[in-house]
Length: 201
Image (tube, rainbow, N blue to C red; front, side):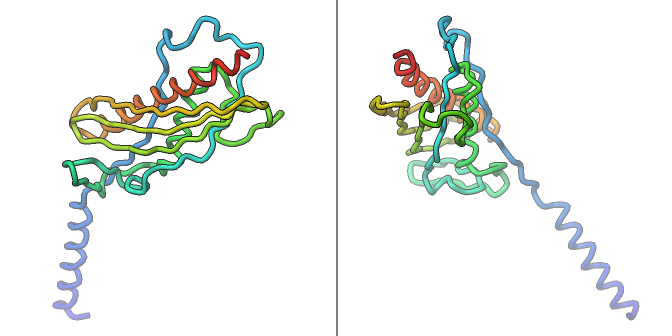
């Protein structure tokens, strides 16, 4: 290799390294369970046996079913941010968080996203259809969920709709994710409220 060729090769290598060093780094986010306040857990929440709950497949809008976090920028516009990403799919995160929240609210270790050991006929089966998963940086996050609870035995199913809006703390994606997590905690409390009356009969 001639001296000129070597100089050109080194220049290209330095340019490539410089470009890599200047590229923005992606941040990865996860939803988190929220510990309910004491007032959300009734004093008579001691059960003879823990309630068994199985959370089924959760459906979400196609717009947000992607690695990138989607935020609204106008009435008819959104921003799909390439550098703010979910650490794992929302289809996995949402049932995981609902599971953890319900376990806390119902004071039961038998809340799962898959069938557990024991009598499967004794489990409450929860289905969730997320209609809206929407947020704007520095504003609010809104979750709209159609849900149903199928009690064990021959009891009729209980259906409901939870529409929750939470403020974002700051104009960052951290604030958006925290608001989503708080909204899911409210959804979990409303589902738990549907489970408790049927569990006491």
